[in-house]
Picture 1 (spheres, rainbow, N blue to C red):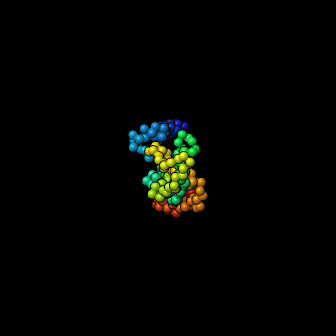
Picture 2 (cartoon, one colour; picture 1 turned 90 degrees about the vertical axis):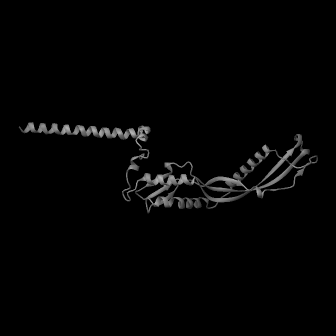
Picture 3 (cartoon, rainbow, N blue to C red; picture 1 turned 45 degrees about the vertical axis):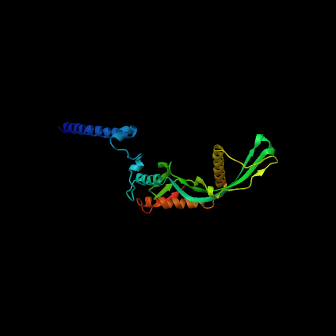
Length: 233
């Protein structure tokens, strides 16, 4: 009689375990389908699911998720697009020349002094999740920002000055440029300014850039995880 009861108990447990196993397998299949088939996830309105188990795991100290920090930083970057750290004046001298029939005796030359302003900073338009790294164990948020780069150059045409045209022995008149030649000239001036700005040393530009980035993102990050340090690389 005792042996018969044991067999019944084992059979009953097996019967209870089977539905539980099926339920677990069904849940795992459902979760896997959300990541393997994005269209299925989108149709359920679950577009913002975490992409890793690290994002699903809440910070043990503060109770915030890594995905919250990352999304807030990227949202702020999308709003700003470009962060100008420093503007730098620049000037270049460009020589124009025209020569009739490629004969040096008919050559005319004129030197033009062009001025402009270059802006150095960060372009956030291509930022992605890999830029933001969170380590809850040491309470740090690392931003991979690199070094400030030249964002754009604007020529100040009002400051442009022209020297007198120099003529060879048989050259007369002034240098006149067509609309197409003027477009090429302005492009060459822009390129000359970029080259000069990029080759000139910029003391403390990187440290100034980090402080500007810190001022931009620190309120966003500390609003989610107060007390965390912000590191740059």
